[in-house]
Length: 256
Image 1 (cartoon, rainbow, N blue to C red):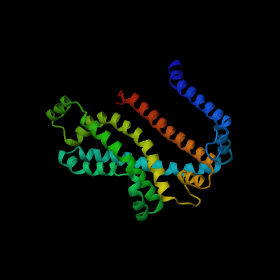
Image 2: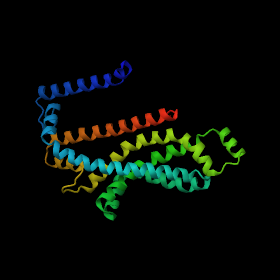
Image 3: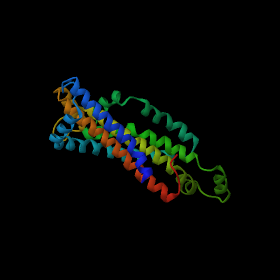
Image 4: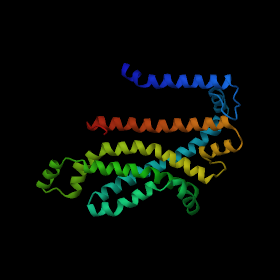
C-alpha cells in the first residue's frame, strides 16, 4: 500500500496545486470565462453538459477501440509474415514507414472523400496506431535467443514451430509495449479524423464538440471536452497496462 501510495500521491498533489493556483489566478485577475475559464466553471459546465459530452465521447471511443483492435491484429500478423524472410521485410517495411511518417492531417481529407464516414475515421486512426505494434512485434520476434534458434534447427523444427514456440513468446512483451503506445495514438488519430471530417448530426464525436464550442466561444465546454479526452486517453493507457501486467505475470516475462 505504501508503494502504491507513493506512485499516485505526488501526481495528485501536483494536480490539486495546479488547479488551486489556476482558479485563484482567474479570480484574482478577473479573466473572462471566454478567454480562460476556471476549473470550477469547467466542472460546472461538465455537470450541465455531461449527457452531450459523454454521448460524443462514446462515438470517439468506438472509433478508437475498433482502430486499436485492427492495429493490434494487423500489426502482429504483418510482423509474423515479414519475419519469414529478409526479402519480405525489405519489401514491405518501407511502405509501413511511409504510412507512419505521412501526416494524417494531410491524407485524412482524401480518405474521408473516398470512404464512408465511420470507415474513414477508423482507417485514419488505424494508420496512426498501426506502426508501433508492427515495429515492436518485429523487434520482439528478432529478440529470441540465437542459441535456442540453433537448438530448434538441430531438432528439425519447422518455421511455424519456431515462430509458435520460440519467437512468439519472446515477442509478447514487445507487442504489449507497442499496444500501450498505440492505445493513445488511436485516440489521437480518431480525434484528428473527426476534426477533419467536421460532421454533425446525432452521432458526432467529441472532436466535433470541441470545434463547435470553439466556433460559439463556449470555452468552458471546450475545456470540459478536452479534459474528458485526456481522461479517456489515460484510462486506455491504464487498462492496457493493467492487462499487460497480468499477462506478463502469468507468463513470467517482463515488458521491455
